[in-house]
Amino acid sequence: MTTTMTVNTAAKTIEMTKTFATKAARFGSDEYKMLQEARRDYPDYKVETVARKNSKSKQEEKPSYKGLTYEYMEKYIAVHDDDDQTIMQEYLELRGMSEEADEALAESFSYQEMKNWFLDKFPAIADFHKKRAALLEKTHKKPTKSEAAREKMVARRTALLNKKIA
Image (cartoon, rainbow, N blue to C red; front, side):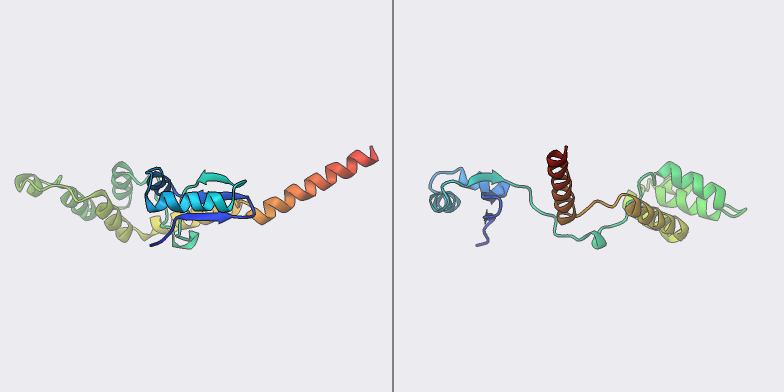
């Protein structure tokens, strides 16, 4: 049995997930008994429900293609297609919008399939989104918890020193 309750001695809290809290609310359940035991062992600790931490690292995150709509794909294909419009015809076929697809009562592929097809046809779009995400990451880098704590400590020290001098 995996527990989803932890004792955080630094913050003096007993932390549990929402699922665990729901189960612990049932009198007599195993989770209820575990919570009561933790409360007996740590009577002055605060009980908190916390959100689960995302186990995926930022490196594993899939790139976001915000704004990559069907309308955008159609405009991009129209600008970058050859004279015979072979890519647009293929797009219409996959979307179920061609004459043949209409006669066969064919449905469109899912958005995910269409997005994958589009990015395979036009890899420059994927490259652009990767470059843009990298630029955004550089400009909006958030300080880590330890950096933020250090900045806060330095600001407080400065404020305290200024009070003594002033």
